[in-house]
Length: 408
Ligand SMILES: Cc1cc2nc3c(=O)[nH]c(=O)nc-3n(C[C@H](O)[C@H](O)[C@H](O)COP(=O)(O)O)c2cc1C
Image (cartoon, rainbow, N blue to C red; front, side, top):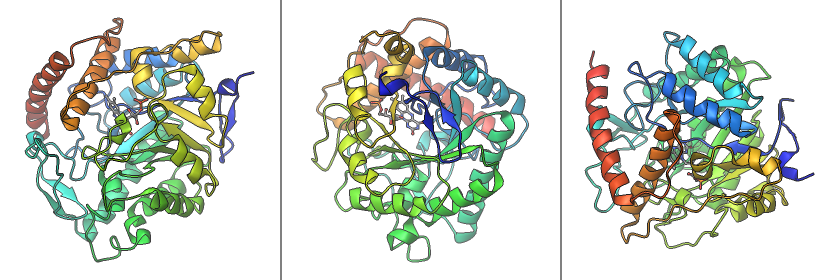
């Protein structure tokens, strides 16, 4: 039998029924209360029926004042817990595990959302041509860092109460924990900056605090960059060192990705000129990190064909994550299981400006999520320009609605 469909036992004893995960994708489809509503439930039912063994939600915010994008899901109190329970139910309806990804944008906070941006240091995101997209951050105080850790713990505990089977703490892609890990974004000289141990402190403290307050069978996972792909940034050796630090905690899985808004390696594009594999971008990095990791590793990025998925599992990597491919065809795992050799075409936007190309690619994928949320078939062969413009208009409208909601 293909390794793709062999179960995986996690360190806490829980079992994933196969090796395919639907990786996190921010949907921007929350209801008017920034909770999961019908749209998200319909979308996640499609993935549940599609056969992935693990469904990781798009990032859910630990603070209503800090969203990675408009119409994002926020979980900071039990006010709408019944809707989260319905969401968890939809994800788990066909036997998949459902993990809620929890996140805070830190300095990657869109200026249009009208909220103060906070980060490890007052260092703004720097993307040529898109300087005005993100707000200028200020450095968090130590008391605010402690409060933030409590927010992650609170959201994780609420996720367990809602019936999710785990959480994934997002420490990749240039969001808050990834900023702390980065020597470029983190210029602190206190216990939260400087040495790698200090830069990783917020992540490690959060993992430890979550682990002690959820039940042992509740899975705790981390998404980490295998590198930031920026000169002077968090690199592959540091990623291996963070995994070694995580070895000391009861972490059930580490997902490896890479990049950030500044260097969108997760889409196969880097700004420091380093080249990535054409498919399964971070596999080589993951195989190197596997030499030191005690928990199972998952690799995500660029996987859309069965042959590549099989190849990923031939080495020490235990799981593979797919985002784009499952946005285009949520039933890919089920089709592979029934023996089909199906795959999806890559979404390639060959524009010179990599940041704009990355934004257009994201817009095309988000359009597929919106179609699935309305029960419609996907249409990945769409104009990148139209998808980008359409997404920008929608983002503007949703940001206006968000500003009204958050100031109530
Ligand atoms: C529309 C979109 C939204 C995404 N949102 C998230 C997110 O909320 N959290 C996250 O960790 N990664 C997010 N990602 C990154 C994916 O999880 C994944 O790492 C990346 O797309 C590479 O995998 P792929 O080639 O299979 O798409 C997003 C990707 C896309 C395309």
